[in-house]
Length: 201
Image (cartoon, rainbow, N blue to C red; front, side, top):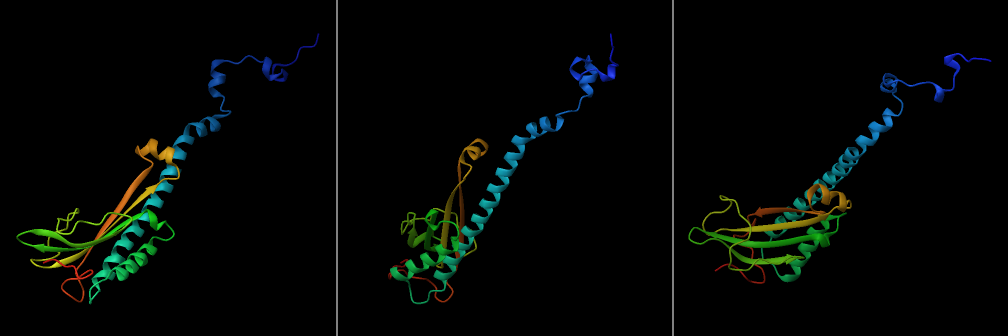
């Protein structure tokens, strides 16, 4: 009868001790990868969404400032067709993102020491215009205007819905976030910019 040296025995027939199992490093990389995969996916999705949100937020800010600057340069008063063109021009700043998702409101607001801020006129796109004669629904920083002066206020909001809606809902509790920016401009040429002849009295 021929007896094989232990080193020549088939691997399956050789006895394995607990210490041998502990020293066995085969498939460790696969196990580590499986453990890290969820974290890697979360970081990838989160990084992508943050970069997208930051890019859109910059576009929202540029849209708000562009519209406010255009309106503030008006010298002869605005009519509906002119303000419509200004809204369309500022909306194009959102490219390549959809302008239909941007809610834009432009208003002229007057400040008096006795009554505070009051909306003179307001126009909107994909949103509801502010009510004339009421207080604006945003907080205007103090010091921008003094008693009797007016300021052009533009507010742009954009609802960004993630392409990874399920993952983002698990992380943030919602598949969408609202990005908004408000700009303030003093009229450049005149003391007050009128719209269709409307102004604060």
